[in-house]
Amino acid sequence: MLEPPDQKGRSLDELALGEASGIEALPKRVNRYGDAKRRALEVAKYIGEQPGEDVLSRRVSGCGEYLLFRHYFTVDQVRLHEAYLCTKHLLCPLCAIRRGARALQAYLPRYEAVCELQPLLRPFLMTLTVKDGADLQERFDHLHKSQRELWKRKQRGRGSVLDGVRAAVWSYEVKRGKGSGLWHPHLHMVAMAEHQPDAVQLANEWQSITGDSFIVDVRAIDQADPASGFLEVFKYALKFSDMEPEDTFHAYQVLKGRRLVSSAGLFRGIEIPETLTDEPLDDLPYVELFYRYFEGGYSLQRGMGQRPIEASEATGNRGRGTRPGNSQSNQRSDFQRVAGACRVLDPWRTS
Image 1: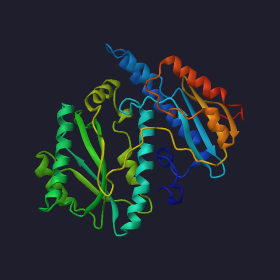
Image 2: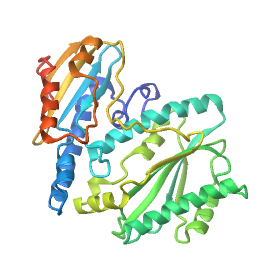
Image 3: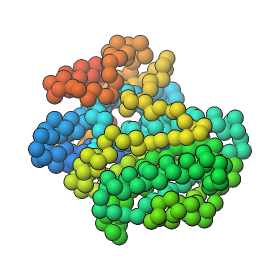
Image 4: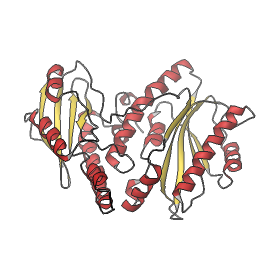
């Protein structure tokens, strides 16, 4: 169980590591990024074998070449300040982690505000599925259409299991069904209501809409640990560790351009930032830790302590984290620029 006092200011990947946070969690965090980078390279290799996909392959392959963290040691927070990230979260596990972290950072403050304004509302985690199928496009469209109909029933005011829901955010997830081997799209939702939505009523209503599925799940989220529910919603859209590169690329082709995170009610209107790096903490001293990816994982290269104004001048303010249009030469230039702004701090490095 995650400790509530540690949640504020922590990213999705830090929360997923358990109680550890700040500099203590950084080695595990970097190793997790390294695992994600290795999987991205496998996907990039497959994409490169497809006709006409050389540019996309290079973009994914170059993702995460370097990572620049800032450790704000007076408050023990570590933030990813700069990196080259491809932003292809349906292909790249590293960008999927970062996108989830940014989504969590966007929604948790609104959740806290809703709790203050309407303290009787409680969070619940709801899961909706449809029958597995061989055609991912058809199955995803079926799930998406069914979800829209469920909300329309609430709007019509004729009685729906969602009538008591005042705020909701949900995301779509795609994987292969364990038993069937067919495509299994489903969605996870954090819904806020005064009373827990009835699971039997939801199952009956959902089956009447889908015609093929009554499998749903409704459970309360610990109000002392709300991040647990949001973690389930904002995790990867694809199960990278369970999918072959061929399936990952096919899912990307089907789902690219689709809105995979949506919201309603008091959560409506929240935008997930495009930039995948973290917001800096102004006016606090910090140490910079620079990692470069080599075969097998990340290695700490250089680091230095700076006053905030000097850090801004040293690393610049342009395009922190997402430079999708960069050429390989520009990527190398970015790498050299950031590396050159650092001095050796200490010899420790992650394995």
